[in-house]
Image (tube, rainbow, N blue to C red; front, side):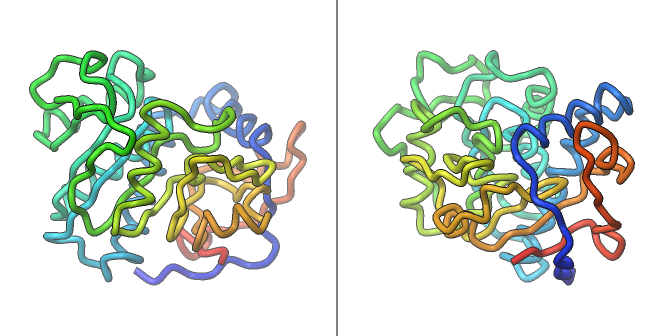
Length: 263
């Protein structure tokens, strides 16, 4: 797949605006979160296949670091697609299943039924008892398995201050891993509105962001953490952007491809 470059007229938005997009998609249009998550995860898997595996992920090793929210759910969807395409996929969760939202927990259960290797990064006492969810021993930097690519789906744009706990440990471990990191929506630890790069924060080789790029990515420090920036279509109609409170003019960005490169 050849990923085209986007034009210069793509608007950048804040976290608050992205929250309004997500709300309007679900509440006003009736588009299910499950649908948007599927678009996000398959797009992430597609970028992984095209950018890092030269179009063929068969036999390549992928490590997915997933949080408990929607960002983690998107990473779990990507894990499923890459597994289906022949990659050897391992998933490390930063929270037990009981702390996950309904939709990302559904994605986790699908992977468990498929027999994909899923375990938890963090305190063994906090893990859900399940034959496919065996906790790792907590450590300052938890050991991560060998991989050719790491997918960061820990936090996304819903960052509230510096990451802590298992999420922080997973971020530090990912930054010490020899494999490149592909982040979903925003590198974990980077504020998508202000561009602040917290400690710790993912240092990504590339980021696959959703719907519209985030304004904070333009800041120099954030741009270095983001790496290459790709934009993915999750099905937002131009009419939704145009109406209040967003009042954004968004053209047919994805007319030629569901994924475009911004830089």
